[in-house]
Image 1: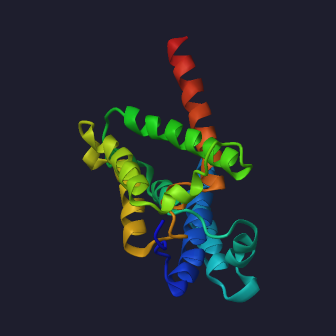
Image 2 (image 1 turned 60 degrees about the horizontal axis):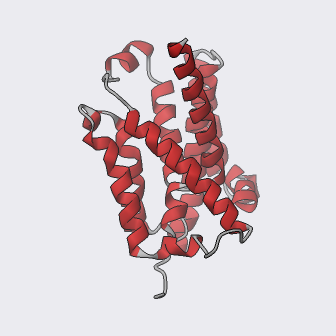
Length: 213
């Protein structure tokens, strides 16, 4: 295996703060929306969380999150940023800018992410016949992930949905900047995103059962 292409140290440090800022501010805004927090307070809390991450040294949330979890994936912060952008928009604008259409391919990618996370967990404990994680440094894995990421765009009207572009955008940033570690698997999945995918899948199953019932 050839020497892997790693991200620049300055870019890694910038992503540590920028990535966690998107996760906390965007994800926090989405949670506040679900809790019924009014829009003005929601926006103020998102700004506070973002500024907390961007503070210098050990005053920053990114410092402690980096010690505990390292840098987030690329896809996770992009997804949180999108959810935060939706949560902080006025309801009328949000409804008008959300085009209808099937989301079966996006749901399929959720299950692929869950399965990949379990495989990586087994790999961590050396329970697979051969190592999986090092393959993320190889071009064939990047190609395979890119094909999977592009599948949702084949749906009618998918090109108008921001959510369908999140995975391709994450891989494009990985190709350009090699974030966060130079391994393509780290670009599309991290532990927190993996846990969130389980919650999304569970909600999908509950909604599907309600429709069937």
